[in-house]
Length: 426
Image 1 (cartoon, rainbow, N blue to C red):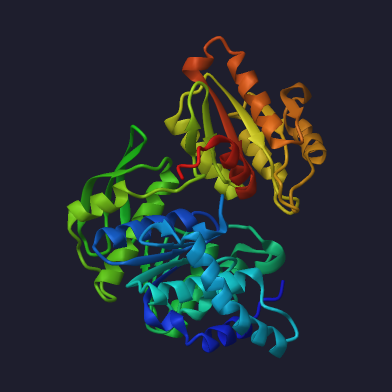
Image 2: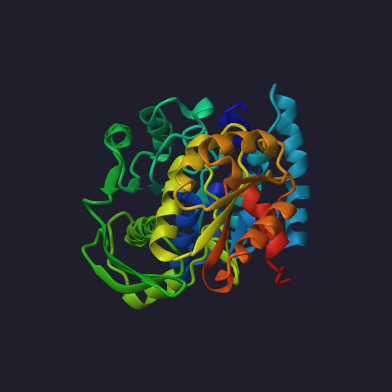
């Protein structure tokens, strides 16, 4: 992978620099980026503004990456947009030694779609890192950084500090950085970046807090004190886990800053409540079946798995839990398996359809070093793995009251599972 903004800048130049036609909130971090982007967009839309949202990767269709007013771009519009951009992409490819990447092109397509709509505000998730990511042509007025941990170390750096420095690159002159609570190793580069470019800093724990959270049916009730000093009480968020509460708080802080034109502005509590209530995050502790309960969670590194496990322990009371796990070859599989060991009674090891997926047999051998060998079943085909896990769960005489299946380990594992388990509403 060649991290070079020159190509995407040139493509956007040929397209008339569409990214300059709308305001933007730019989101990065190690975990929680997509959820935070989706909550932020929902809050902005609740305030009557037309929104664009660009996130990755997708779970079902590539069109999910580009949404306008909360809806994926249509098939005909997506095709027409690509055909419009393709000749300009060919010009750029001819000018550079390395061709545009898939992500370069989808980024340009998103920005062109937002300009054509037109949208008032775009919420844009970084693909990888920050400073050298294709989306970092925005120079967004509000940057959001969710918790930073070790991931993609082959590209972003070997330490949390190095990764934080890369992610801090989305903070530009005169902008405002809203950051989730960070370890000191991550926080120092963020503070240094703000000082270097003259950006304002709004940090969780100092300027905004999650004051209270209670488990509720289908999600949680929150009380959040925002950077403006306003307290938003009894906010219902239809997402599970403490980490989603903190994602919601960061999203609310970002929207206060955005709608206050750089200074946090207290918002109407009813409108905020509406925005939170309509927030969705597919594949993040998403319940897709009952009796037995089947949950999908796209945790793909130890930090994400820690958050998922904590949420399951807090919010679900399974009599037994069967894990279905498929991971990428370059991920810390052992770290994730160790985190699953205390909550999973059995494990079914599998692999997704992605080329980078770790072979099931290899992952199974590792799992049998962490779990008891008899607890681990290997099923290379995901459909078989899900069927096996459900059968094991149903063997419990209390299966229809307390057994569960957790499908996790990779966004692609969850995406493949959704195709099998979630009915297409279209």
